[in-house]
Length: 75
Ligand SMILES: [Zn+2]
Image 1 (cartoon, rainbow, N blue to C red):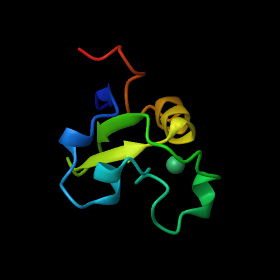
Image 2: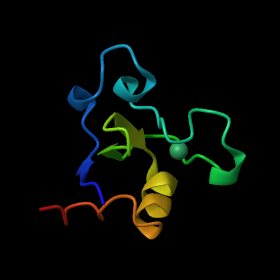
Image 3: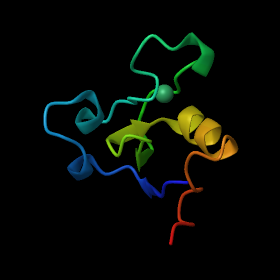
Image 4: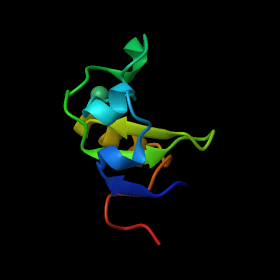
């Protein structure tokens, strides 16, 4: 399980959607992930160790699936 952090644009590569405050979890063509809630609220590392930004819907799904720790409960 990866840690999660309150969304922080500084964690994301300049010029990427995540750095602009956009959700990168729903960024690709991923209908199985449901509807994007829009604004990024969480920053997390994916299984490849890349920083991603997630909206509130992404946060909920990722925590539920055990991919990331709930916000504020990291080590
Ligand atoms: Zn989203």
